[in-house]
Length: 240
Image 1 (cartoon, rainbow, N blue to C red):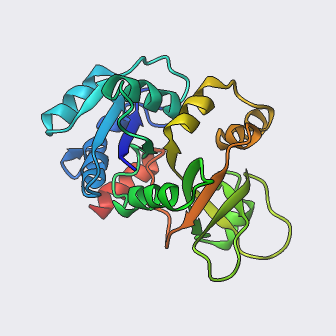
Image 2 (image 1 turned 135 degrees about the horizontal axis):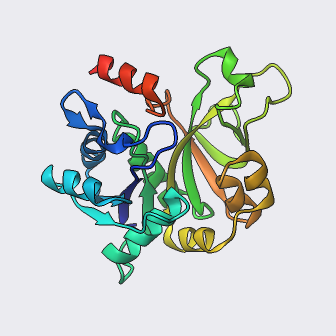
């Protein structure tokens, strides 16, 4: 396979406007995310919704593509950038990394690529981590993955994703919003309208399941830090 990492990002974040350019230890957040992705050894580009993001990434030596700011989702932005960068279809595996994960392990991207390569029935690869706290089980902001995972396995097919509390007292798998798509699966996903379950749970991966696409998830040790609001940003600055 020939993977390509694309990082979708835009300035108009609801909870933290201007988030991609937020300074973290002297570097814009999107530059930190790009640098982490580059350490994977895979080709990387930023799918930007705003020209100022393109300028910052290019100034750091990176590759960035300006996409329509009106695109409805990061997945749509990734597809738009892909068609600009690779119109001939050289890259058959597309890794969607989040621009608000400034310290993400480079192995997240390669884990998704490996899952696509190793599982012929996998249309979309993603990641899960063990719950960080028992409170995760009832937290609607923590997306839970229901997996067909047997003891000792480190990857399995995903059966469902939910914000709801799962029945029983067993630990839950916390979904990490990193995706690897086969190119045809990405196109099919973006061509479809939001599905009923997606609209109900506010989780776009449910559209893929309703389309009949197969999602597989690999287990990682812990969830990467995500910057979603001002408190997260201050925590990231303290970490640096």
